Image 1 (cartoon, helix red, strand yellow):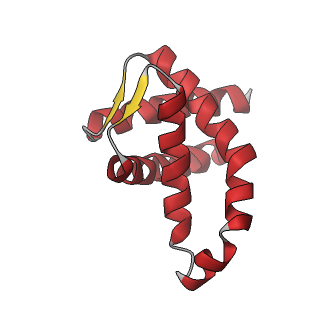
Image 2 (tube, rainbow, N blue to C red):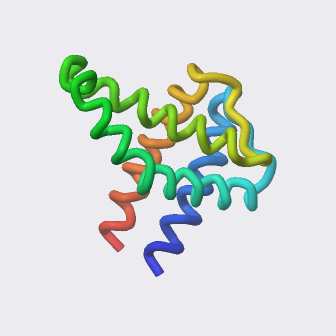
Length: 113
Protein backbone atom coordinates (compact mmCIF):
# COMPACT_ATOMS: atom_id res chain seq x y z
CA UNK A 1 0.00 0.00 0.00
CA UNK A 2 2.87 2.37 0.81
CA UNK A 3 4.40 1.71 -2.60
CA UNK A 4 1.22 2.79 -4.39
CA UNK A 5 0.91 5.84 -2.14
CA UNK A 6 4.54 6.78 -2.83
CA UNK A 7 3.96 6.36 -6.57
CA UNK A 8 0.88 8.62 -6.52
CA UNK A 9 2.66 11.21 -4.36
CA UNK A 10 5.69 11.10 -6.68
CA UNK A 11 3.39 11.79 -9.62
CA UNK A 12 1.91 14.72 -7.68
CA UNK A 13 5.46 15.93 -7.00
CA UNK A 14 6.17 15.75 -10.73
CA UNK A 15 3.10 17.90 -11.37
CA UNK A 16 4.37 20.31 -8.72
CA UNK A 17 7.73 20.51 -10.49
CA UNK A 18 5.93 21.34 -13.74
CA UNK A 19 3.92 24.02 -11.91
CA UNK A 20 6.94 25.54 -10.16
CA UNK A 21 9.39 25.44 -13.06
CA UNK A 22 8.55 26.26 -16.66
CA UNK A 23 11.30 24.07 -18.14
CA UNK A 24 9.33 20.93 -17.25
CA UNK A 25 5.88 20.20 -18.66
CA UNK A 26 3.49 17.39 -17.80
CA UNK A 27 0.30 17.00 -19.85
CA UNK A 28 -1.89 15.16 -17.32
CA UNK A 29 -1.90 13.25 -14.07
CA UNK A 30 -1.80 10.00 -16.05
CA UNK A 31 1.34 11.22 -17.79
CA UNK A 32 2.77 12.12 -14.39
CA UNK A 33 2.01 8.61 -13.07
CA UNK A 34 3.75 7.02 -16.03
CA UNK A 35 6.69 9.43 -15.81
CA UNK A 36 7.09 8.76 -12.08
CA UNK A 37 7.17 5.02 -12.77
CA UNK A 38 9.71 5.43 -15.59
CA UNK A 39 11.93 7.70 -13.47
CA UNK A 40 11.76 5.13 -10.68
CA UNK A 41 12.70 2.30 -13.05
CA UNK A 42 15.58 4.27 -14.55
CA UNK A 43 16.84 5.11 -11.06
CA UNK A 44 16.59 1.45 -10.09
CA UNK A 45 18.21 -0.08 -13.20
CA UNK A 46 20.39 2.45 -15.06
CA UNK A 47 21.52 4.80 -12.27
CA UNK A 48 23.60 2.22 -10.32
CA UNK A 49 25.52 1.35 -13.50
CA UNK A 50 26.21 5.03 -14.19
CA UNK A 51 27.29 5.62 -10.59
CA UNK A 52 29.83 2.80 -10.79
CA UNK A 53 31.12 3.87 -14.22
CA UNK A 54 31.55 7.49 -13.15
CA UNK A 55 32.96 6.78 -9.69
CA UNK A 56 36.32 8.50 -10.34
CA UNK A 57 34.59 11.68 -11.52
CA UNK A 58 32.20 11.51 -8.58
CA UNK A 59 35.09 11.22 -6.14
CA UNK A 60 36.99 14.12 -7.75
CA UNK A 61 33.91 16.36 -7.58
CA UNK A 62 33.17 15.23 -4.00
CA UNK A 63 29.85 13.71 -5.01
CA UNK A 64 28.51 16.67 -6.97
CA UNK A 65 28.51 14.63 -10.19
CA UNK A 66 25.60 12.63 -8.73
CA UNK A 67 23.43 15.68 -9.47
CA UNK A 68 24.38 15.30 -13.13
CA UNK A 69 23.43 11.62 -13.05
CA UNK A 70 20.06 12.48 -11.49
CA UNK A 71 19.49 15.09 -14.19
CA UNK A 72 20.36 12.55 -16.88
CA UNK A 73 17.79 10.09 -15.50
CA UNK A 74 15.17 12.86 -15.41
CA UNK A 75 16.03 13.92 -18.96
CA UNK A 76 16.08 10.32 -20.22
CA UNK A 77 12.57 9.77 -18.88
CA UNK A 78 11.35 12.81 -20.79
CA UNK A 79 12.97 11.46 -23.95
CA UNK A 80 11.10 8.18 -23.68
CA UNK A 81 7.65 9.58 -22.83
CA UNK A 82 5.22 11.74 -24.78
CA UNK A 83 3.31 13.51 -22.00
CA UNK A 84 6.41 14.54 -20.06
CA UNK A 85 8.84 17.04 -21.57
CA UNK A 86 12.04 18.71 -20.32
CA UNK A 87 13.42 21.55 -22.46
CA UNK A 88 17.13 20.84 -21.96
CA UNK A 89 19.85 19.66 -19.63
CA UNK A 90 19.72 22.76 -17.42
CA UNK A 91 15.97 22.31 -17.05
CA UNK A 92 16.55 18.64 -16.24
CA UNK A 93 19.07 19.60 -13.55
CA UNK A 94 16.76 22.14 -11.91
CA UNK A 95 13.72 19.88 -12.31
CA UNK A 96 15.52 16.90 -10.81
CA UNK A 97 16.67 18.99 -7.85
CA UNK A 98 13.11 20.10 -7.11
CA UNK A 99 11.78 16.57 -7.67
CA UNK A 100 14.43 15.12 -5.34
CA UNK A 101 13.62 17.66 -2.62
CA UNK A 102 9.94 16.80 -2.87
CA UNK A 103 10.87 13.10 -2.82
CA UNK A 104 12.71 13.59 0.47
CA UNK A 105 9.59 15.23 1.91
CA UNK A 106 7.42 12.36 0.65
CA UNK A 107 9.74 9.79 2.21
CA UNK A 108 9.72 11.67 5.52
CA UNK A 109 5.91 11.81 5.56
CA UNK A 110 5.54 8.15 4.62
CA UNK A 111 7.95 7.09 7.34
CA UNK A 112 5.63 8.58 9.94
CA UNK A 113 2.58 6.78 8.55
